Image (cartoon, rainbow over all chains, first blue to last red; front, side, top):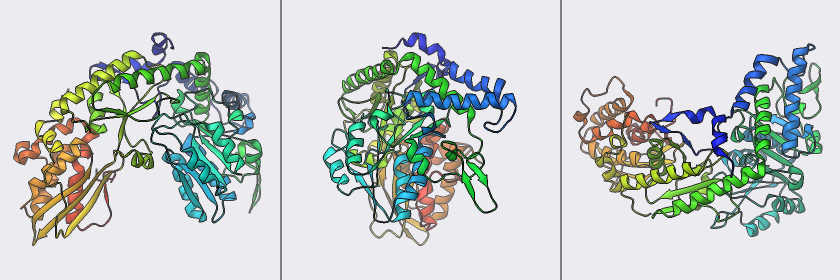
Length: 409
Length: 154
């Protein structure tokens, strides 16, 4: 386990009191809190080297460009990308997936082609493909999940028989915590001739990620779920694919030469980074990666998984509580319901004890339909959480049961 | 600091557990659907209006205790009322939660609906209490599209 007593002072927000209680932040799958080194990196950037990147001839602009490009190298190293130019900075996973759909998808998906998604996909990885398939007259094939919340491998194989153009799935489910066998799924999809898109929003913060050994084609990540500022994120892609893709956003920075009626494009990754980029976000993301690297991603994963195991064990001791998702191969995400108490009521009651959890469909409505619930409550852990947080959670959940006089659902 | 007991009053817990008029209405001539897309609360409302009087009203759907109890108590409050009376009750209820101009000086003038006065201290839950009323408003206006709590009016 990580030494949370030593870590917690790094996170100023954790000193906040909520309704007279210490803040117990258990909504890390939604977004994470930011440590001082990240906050300092953003402020220092503006205090010392702020200038527009890639265009100034003066020293300040060179320093800003170096900070931005160093951040790209840091991200590339963190996920073992093919090269620094394999990393396109975006606003996060949603924009990354929209980039793939809008550029690669528009250029390659034809009428009657198939795009494969899964029933545990977040709306951010599902809806861009819905839009593309509607536009192109292509078929969207959704792979089913098993009763214990895994991708149904038999149905996955059946979907691949359609020889899809593209297969998209999450490495880790944000709603269930399932860690999918991403390398195996990528291998199967490639054997069927598909391009593979991995939603890394929930894996990058919590596991050691190696995109080359996963051998996916596109990998999307969000910085704000891994201690970095909101609006930071990246699309990591095989350089050959990026080279062949048309631009996504037109604008400054992404061009090589501009004529009256046409233009030629800058080299990758700049071809996909039209407009002044969010340099503070890139710099903050790099600082977050340095922080996580110092902790060690293997220890981060072990810490969260231990907390999730304890939380599941303690919650399941409460009569009427149902925990969703697989028994093993899961990350620090614990979705649950408690009798017939609606998750929003649970969240309101927990909030009064300073506990932040998410309640709702978690942007996975197709999954909720399959689980047969309109919503779940979700506790999700990160590096600063500890067993005291689980104690507080369990006490407050029991309190909700007393208030509502729970009838097991 | 507001207490959880102000929000989850016994009346609300009772109507959540045993919602009244939780059914379809035979011969309904007004209907509307309401959604709270952030929470996933859903309500389907059916009304039989005779002249300008609400003769029968029923709802179905799923949602949190606040939205369910609000729908249940609303159906009781507007049954037998004219549509104009129901609309003015809607304004009074809405303003009780939002602190608007039509807020009753004394919430107890709203009868059982006063149980929701405490919701005002829980801003994240105001839309749960309002969902059924917005849906009723839409049903009485014959509005075709589903109501959502994400409308700018909220």
